[in-house]
Image (cartoon, rainbow, N blue to C red; front, side, top):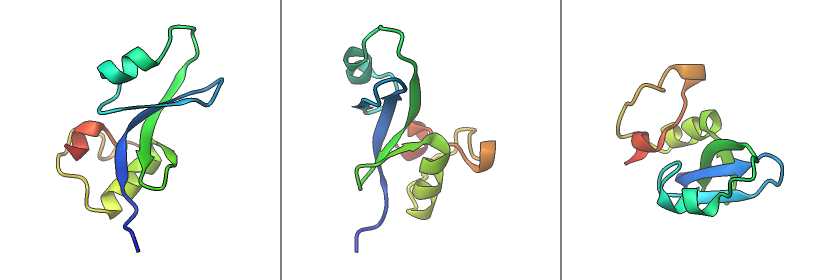
Length: 88
C-alpha cells in the first residue's frame, strides 16, 4: 500500500475550482498559470492521491508521512500549517 504523501504546492481558484500546481506557492509556473481576473485562491498542496488539501490538512498528511524536514514557523498554527519550505 502506498503511503499517503504530499506531492507539491497548489492553489485552488475559489470561483472555478481550478487547481494550479507549482514547486512552491506563487513560483514562476504558478504565477504564469493564474490569471489576474480577481478570482481569489486557497493555498494548499496536492497529495499523491490527486486531492487538493488546505495547508492545515496537508500538515497532518506530511507529518504522518515523515515529510517535515525543516521547521519554518507554522508548526503550532492551527495544529500545524504546512509550507513548501517544510518539505524541501
